[in-house]
Image 1 (cartoon, rainbow, N blue to C red):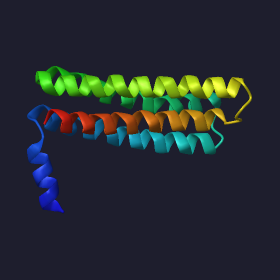
Image 2 (image 1 turned 90 degrees about the horizontal axis):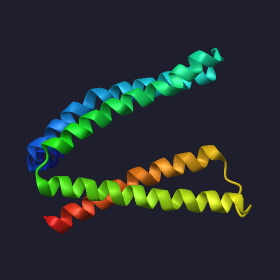
Image 3 (image 1 turned 90 degrees about the vertical axis):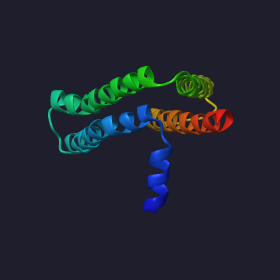
Image 4 (image 1 turned 180 degrees about the vertical axis):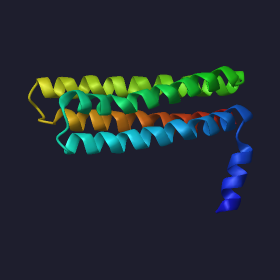
Length: 141
């Protein structure tokens, strides 16, 4: 297993390796802030404190996003084209899914909770980005 991980790491571009290294700290902070959010939401804290803990993970996501933007600047043209294509496809897929969900909800055809719709859209965004990115890497490789 370590050999497979080492071979995968060596196959990455230097820009992608730097991005993965730069993403470790924001990912750990994000995870910690999500745990704190869960604690604050369940422990009956005041509304301003719950709001602060609810929005805290967004700051960690912004930190990760700045690392991603730096990565895009470090990419070569092909890698940038793959990344931007994956982002565009994922955004389009999720936009269509969101509009479809809103119209189905408005028509009274389904009765999904807002929490479930938001969660599924987030998962769809991550999954579609990963799948399209993988497909584009195979297509251009």
